[in-house]
Length: 298
Length: 312
Image (cartoon, rainbow over all chains, first blue to last red; front, side, top):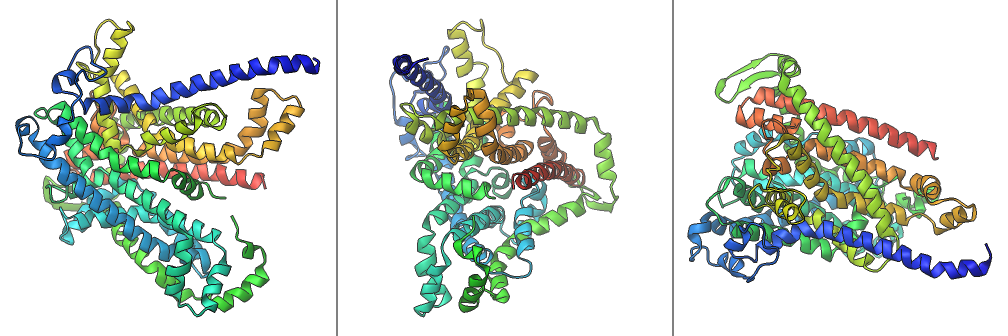
């Protein structure tokens, strides 16, 4: 094959290739988007559209009434969705508080432990890592009964703090692992310079090391937040009223609910997706970095 | 990843003394809060549930707490529920793991090519990952709904089926529905990890392969695969553990049914503990599940480390 023939073929081959790849991309986009769009569109429908057979794919007369009715729980739609209306907003707040609290505590405890594992040499270094990772070996369902009894003894049933400490205990190992790895990528000379300048350890930490570790901290905080936000198993066992029920508990309650309108349930489901989705898109690059440094480490 | 100083042990030692890197008491102190949280809320429950699993203890008769050794375990091994749940767990796990691994590699390969819209897709792939499993379950429940579901609507519109079907009320389709819903939710993690691995492959290797006249499959087999093999193993580990432990999605989507068609070991653990209130047997179930996951993890890790050594 001479060079000319090759040149003549290249463009069309390239175009074919791009067309094929783009087609695959479109299929992938539909696969990702279609299920969620169905939920999203339902949340903008009137109930009759949502129940139509065959389905109305696009709302004939889109409305934001579903979203507005959450602002006024005792309003006109209370009859068709009292539970969803009453519980969604408190659930949202509870979820936010529990997840934010978990993330904050994770960063504090995780920084201390992660720093020590990244920088110090001491007896038991390896076993500590083993303990942290090993504590995640049992599935949650194996821990739920004794955990329930512990929380009951502490008098924390139906308190958000019970959720925070529970989530803390099973998000912390990953946080420590991730932060340890991140701290190791930060040159020691930074710390040494700070010490030379007469910084105390705490000053060095807050003024030098942590600012340099912001991407790692954000990634770790995000994962702790997401894990807490997503949890259903522990929340359903440890909470019972709107004082501490989280959004997944409220949403799961809809499964057996026949009195609430489907459009309201869909709206509640969409609301439960918003915070993690915003975080995911906002910190896209950091998530990928964090995941790869946390899970893929040689 | 090693820091620069780690490659110069002597210099490191000098520095270590200067900044006080040999302060074991301080190091333990820094770990104390984390250890406390983990011991109280993970360590204690782990030991306690092992202890309960050796007892006859049913909340319906809360005063009876009698040591019976391994009886709970032998009862479980003799019960048909266990073997049925184990078989369903195996089917569910194998299908989810295989699909996620295959689709994960394919999607990661796609997102590693350049074509219009790639950037958008790389962001979009995070969408399923960000959806809480409970919402995911609810979403798919409505898609599979027998009366007004989107799947029924779609398939009748294009003429693939004549009348609406109850996807979640037939054993096989319920299991497949569960698998596909879980795959949708967990695929992004695999894609993110695999894509990151693909991006680390030096371009020169592909050029060299092309020079040597390697075909597409050969290039994948000899260039791409060795570079992503380790990450693929990590994906397999994470996915297997997650599939064996799947709970939320089962709770919302199928509730273990129809009948026991989607009753996995985790779901059986839940039923025994919170439906029958048999805490002794329930914890024995939990430990059986744990042993199985632990066994898997061990096998995977052995392969992982052997690979690591093998490749130097």
